Image (cartoon, rainbow over all chains, first blue to last red; front, top):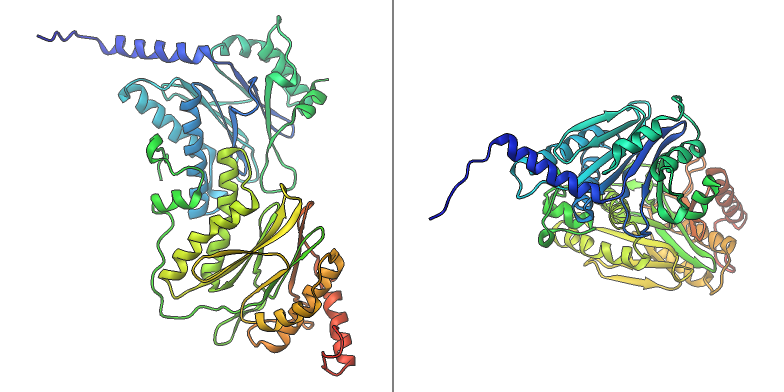
Amino acid sequence: MTNYFYVSPEQLIKDRAEFAQKGIARGRSIVAAIYDQGVLMVAENPSASLNKISEVYDRIAFAGVGKYNEFDRLREAGIRWADSTGFTYSREDVDARALANYYAQHLGDMFTEGQKPLEVEILVAQLGNKVRPTKLYRVAYEGTISDEPRFAVLGGDADTIKDRFALSEDSLEPLRTTLHNAVSALAGPDRVFTADDLEVCVLEDRGSRRTFERLSDARVSDLLG
Amino acid sequence: MGLPLFSAHGDPGPSFWHFAEMSGIDPAPRDHSRENPHATTVIAVRYVGGVVMVGDRQATGNYIASRDVRKIERADRFTALAISGSAARGMELLKIAQLSFEHYEKMTDSSLSLEGKANYLSPIIQRNNLTSPLGVLPLLAGWDESHDQGRIFEYDGAGGCYERFDFATIGSGSPFAEGALRLGFRENLNREEALELGALALYEAGDNDPSTGGPDFVREIYPMMVTVSEDGFHELPTPDVGERFRSINARRTESRGVAGGSLR
């Protein structure tokens, strides 16, 4: 005979949330911040090939923390969504908010209906232009979407890192300063990061259609030095 | 469209075309009875530091449909793609190619090799040409970063992809362009010589083929001239191109339209 135990919805949600949080906390964090010329994304990532930050479209980037296979699948879906939307309509119709909403829906579905919730947190960043604002959308494991005004932190240690980053000035600063702030917020008081430990990408207008750039170690060292 | 998620075994990979087919974004060609504007001359010539491409600007149906079509496009930083045949199909192919190369790059964080790009187009051309009367034949030329040289790939109607080590031409003006290229080509041309030869071959095609637009001095619309080298895709500015065609035209006027004797 099989015994069925009653589990209250509150308990179920709590268990799932704990499970997802634990998974995310195991991974390393990402800081994204708006600077005076664009959007900066910094990940603590010792691997030079397994990326956490990626180009999605002309003015949109993706960053994910948590389980690599899970957020990488979301990244691929985002690129496909963006490319097919741009192909069907026009390049300017590809909007980060729509993509962030799809991510939120999917993560929400997986949280309540999936075998297990996805152990990921997602950032969709958009570099603004005449028709769209510069935006940082953070999507949590259970589908909560938040529009972060100036900077966003993803990952297990988000609150601590957030507090450390918030100490810097309130106005938009140049890339160099913003990178310094982001890296020291990520590292905390006890660690020092070099370019090897970091994955640094920006969205910045440089006169061409595509604005995403993965900064080389040399460039990062130079900016940090 | 919703978020296109796939399971590991059903995943279309980094190929946009494959993905587009699976999701019904790219409709299969339908049968059209009316002919669309077409006819063209595009030339690619290999030189020591890269490839030169020259293409006319005219779209022709029963009359001239357009005088300023861009038949050569930058497919990505190191690749130029030219089209001949149906304008509609050709433009679509250009769009798909540009999108696909970028899509692959974003999905995998690495660029396709030049040969990979050339091969990628084969089945697309094959499917289009074998199912639709609106044929399209592209010409792909680019700088091969791993072999440090310019390379040219041409296609047959069934999608076969062939590398050419000297030069290639597509479009209705090909026979005339090809004649000039055969006489003028030699190995180890430099950039300037290749540009000169390409312009001359296009001038010949425009001269003899009613569906190829030569230099239009009245409207100042000139054939497109493009180089792809280790510095990437570069389109020559209109005044520069105009100057080249004016000088060919001046020589031809001087010889009263006679091209023979020497290559001029």
